[in-house]
Length: 195
Image (cartoon, rainbow, N blue to C red):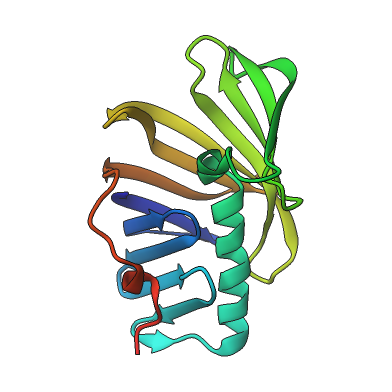
């Protein structure tokens, strides 16, 4: 997924470009360019790693990246790619109105004690938002809500081209995707640490 991103850092907001790459089942990489800051964070299924302006992160930060990437892979929108995982379970728990839209509230558990509460538009069945437990930059648990907009067809899927993320009720990030590819040409080594 390629596009523009806005990241809230304290009282300031940084804008730039971003590329998010996911390879099933457990690889994820994010490249963000917030001039003059360039950040890479990745998880290759075993280890997390990161770099800022080509300077590698220390080991303790890499452990936090691994934890954060595991959250991305098992909760939120990517959790929907794991509905057939052993022990995974989905169930409708309520119907609520979200921003004037009737929504089916669905609890998804991935079989590893991770869960996401999805709100699906009752008419289109597209996800409106996902609520889940994440960790903040200090490694503390925080409730995270991803809100999805502007769905467009990508292959056989309808994929949101805009996402706004809130942590503890505060806006933390907004992504506007200009290009999304499904089954792009990415290999496993792309997710391995840069030496």
